[in-house]
Image (cartoon, rainbow, N blue to C red; front, side, top):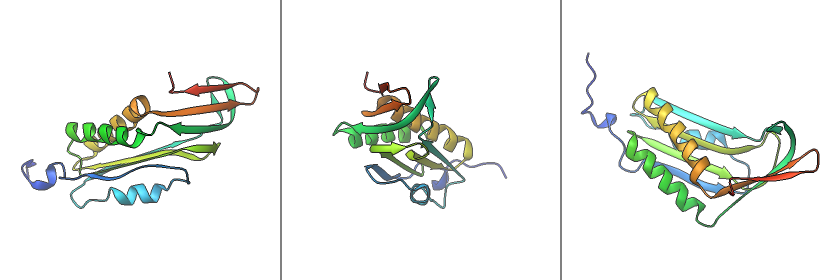
Length: 153
């Protein structure tokens, strides 16, 4: 049977933003994945960003995230842009703020679409744009005593 793109399930949902948040408490992959469940979605892509133990050749001990008061509104603007470019059935994004340790979840995003390719592309666009455009900053502390702000420039 040839694909038919006029079926309602092939289109973006009317209100696909299911979860957007900035949180001080630990993030849940299960919560984000559950938020993007949709019977018309054939593909769901999920990205989990974790605190790694190194950056640019230096050992990272800890880091902290902070954000501007408009960060959630900017997350919504970015999400709406992704929804405008892809047939998103459901979308969720949560970002952590506060002090984190190596291995902690820093960000979890997920997108479900009618097909896997669209889901992969939309999820990548969502995380890339959040990283580059949302006013969320990372303060890294290195083992050698130095520190650095990322995203604040």
